[in-house]
Image (tube, rainbow, N blue to C red; front, side):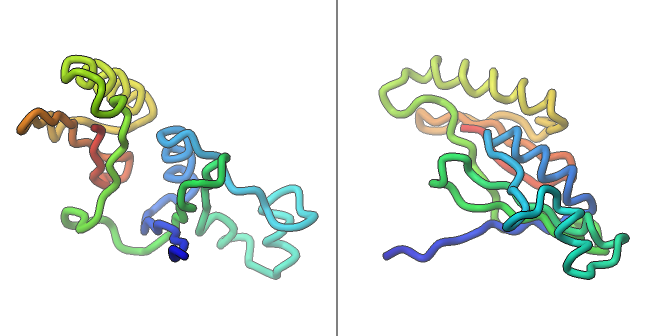
Length: 145
């Protein structure tokens, strides 16, 4: 049996990052546990100080197959290139011709830019593969392929 994982992002604004990535990946914000209707109600019941209520957020795959993404507030900003990044596979698989891949990728790049991502890192093409290197709203690198 495979080991389940979650992917953790250190960030300045966990809620904003969670909302961006939920839209980017077609995920949803994780519901609060048990009978709680809001995360604030849960945090209050747990005795968490109000100034820490938004120090983390999580999103989940509504189909239950993808990993949970967890966003935690950290005091330091991003300084260097990520050592790990996400690749968003949107181009339709190997049966789609390269021009079809490019069209799907560029359409997704535009959608992600409307959510706050940037594509200033540019597009790459190598050995029949095509991808666009992007940054999320806090500068974390990811690719659309």
